[in-house]
Image 1 (cartoon, rainbow over the protein chains, first blue to last red):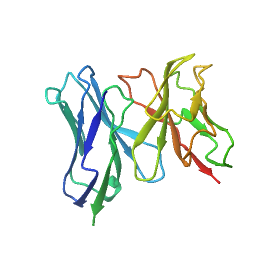
Image 2: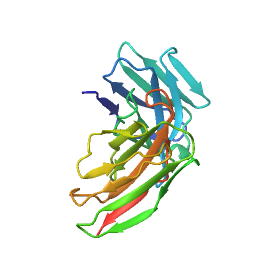
Image 3: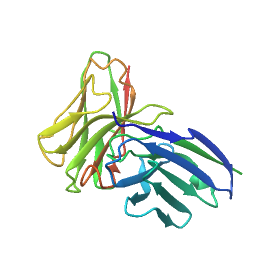
Image 4: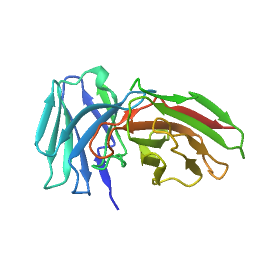
Length: 108
Length: 113
């Protein structure tokens, strides 16, 4: 069946440094790749997404890169800030399977 | 996210009782989803529906049931057959399953006493 693997499960970075989270999927037939952020006690919300006709998308400090050949996409956060501390989820291309999440800690 | 609501926010249930969680959206979305989230864990799919009067089981459907009689409503019933129902339940919707952002409701925290 379809599967999605997200790594790492926990990530701690110094404030101001960069963070990268990777998601690997098995279904090759899709064209939509989202990342969601869930702050403590709140609902997940989309922070960035990419469609398969591009390899990279950037929105200020956040970027997503896609490698369809290798079946993985990655979330990049630069110049991390305390408010970036949260759990981040990728969704498998069919959007009904989520990665297990990455808990990002921004250290002062 | 303001267009999708869940009620109640907190729910307490005695063992052996069925309970129904409400999910309503006014976004005119075709697809709706129910997820379960346990502490420190990801989102696990219970059921989803791509169109009215049709729904499919997710990975952990046992002990749960749903209905989709109206486009805007997708209630989830947690039955007594669900052995460990205490969890945070999230409802979501999107325009089309595969290609659009999911919008999540605020969630219902269910506790079995």
